[in-house]
Amino acid sequence: MARAVINHLRELRARKKWSQAELAKAVNVSRQAINTIENGKHDPSITLAYRIAAALDATITEAFVFTPEER
Image 1: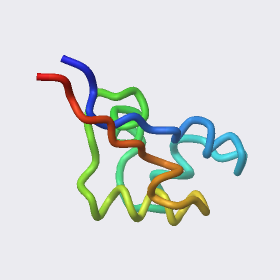
Image 2: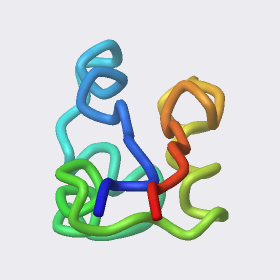
Image 3: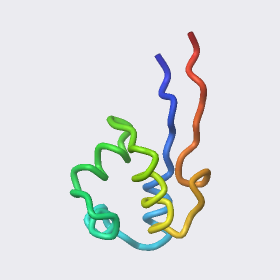
Image 4: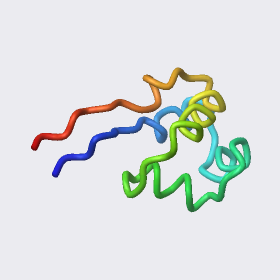
């Protein structure tokens, strides 16, 4: 089954020259949480997705791309 959400966190973090730890601190989660989201092992809640996008000076659609899963 294909992933429903693709993220661009690594690229957006690089644009700001931030580490995972710096992004985690900005959105008040652990570095491990950012790592699992960034590596596609976990999808963030909608609230966290918006907080991450805002911290990275990006829109939600720049940070996260929804792709419908095939059934």
